[in-house]
Length: 283
Image (tube, rainbow, N blue to C red):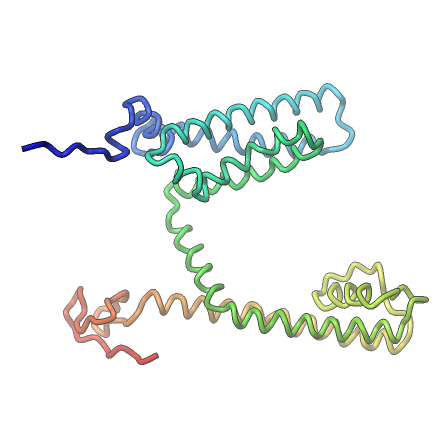
């Protein structure tokens, strides 16, 4: 009887690629943990170097040093990316994943800067690689809370859309009225410019680059400011309700005996204490 040959990626990879994958993707060994921690330090240092290069007044030697430092980081991150492709069980799957795309994007700006000067400042996207800190330092509880927030925002998308459209309508109305009241002679040269003023005013930012001069314009501006304070609490309430709904959806029915949640939809008794569960509420 012929033996079945195992063609799984783990079995067909050369041993050196398996070892490379264990070093880069694993967290079980001290070497793998050290690799990730060193990588995080390099990411932070590279982002700082990019930000420092944008500071005006740097001497030419210092700017050249920072530029060469950025290229050194780029070379290291390029080797890391190639190592991940070689060490991954399924290289194409890694390349298409979120982290694979982030790893690729974080090295492209340096090479693009050879054709488009200035694009190297986009290297600050390397900060996205710090998301691996949640895995390296085992901060999974924070990831779970981030997922909960995402579920809350998704569940509240209709309410957020209605709120956004309502605010957009208000700023259009306020901007148009200010354009009619103040006119170009007071800085409101067009309706889009007036809408910009309304957005800045309703959101309580208040740049002050454009301001009404007439009494009627100031009165309308006062109403817009008060309305801005009134609507600040609305997004907070929307997200709060969404968070509560997301928590309840995760918990499901609570056991009246021990308070355990997350029961199966068709469960009749608590899987911890055996008490009868309340009936499933109809949608």
